[in-house]
Picture (spheres, rainbow, N blue to C red):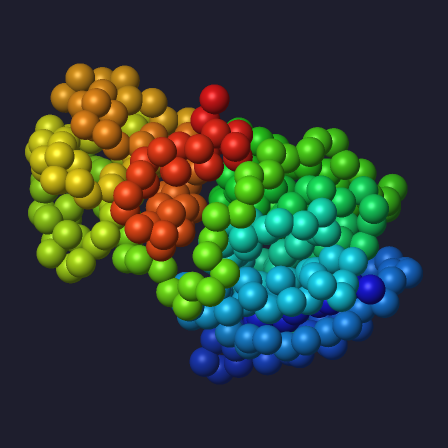
Length: 326
Ligand SMILES: NC(=O)C[C@H](N)C(=O)O
């Protein structure tokens, strides 16, 4: 038996005078998905949220993580329908808490429920087939979209409207689901769970972007606003402007956790450049491998939920176990 948890998103949205509005229930989504392929599996449906994913928050997603965990006790796998805008973040939080062989697969759509040529039914049919298949055992949390199955870790939404909405640039799909059935090509690295299951929220971690001539103001404002850690969306291989480098080195010296990502959207970061990334690495910043800013933010927040002590080692260990860094 598979549990289908419906949370909203475009897959459940209809056109209205106000714009796309979530309204279709999980049972309606399932009914459409069953017209794509014969799904020889029992599915229990629960509507747990009914929102555009831009309206979700960390506390709400932490609640969903616990709901998924409970469902996994009695199900062979869990499928979550979800808006695509924040799907990579919900998938990542689920991955941070995942500790079973059973598959958890998220899916959604780019086109609404009432579109003349919707992509939702096929995406959901594929997600259900993947989660129900013995092939998906041990593949952790995944995103099934446009016939591909991508690992939660390292995946981001790469297209605003295109149907192949998600990409895992340095990892690629783990498998495909199409007319030939369910195929797995790879097994992902699955780090041990680090998300505290009793957490109702996570410490504030702020993403600070780098751009031509960026000064220290955004970093200083983030700290003033109570950030307990920072993710710097750096240039290229993890570089920062001279004033941002200077303020971050000072904050690292005072004990503030800083993680560095790349605004390129593909590839790993390394502290290569004097006056930029090399100075940050020397001061104790952690390079986030191929994680997006948004996933790195959740990783650091989950680590800080257990306190600041030893944060860098715990982030590095997780990144290594996830195959994000060597
Ligand atoms: N395609 C989508 O699902 C986008 C929608 N705004 C959402 O994230 O809920």
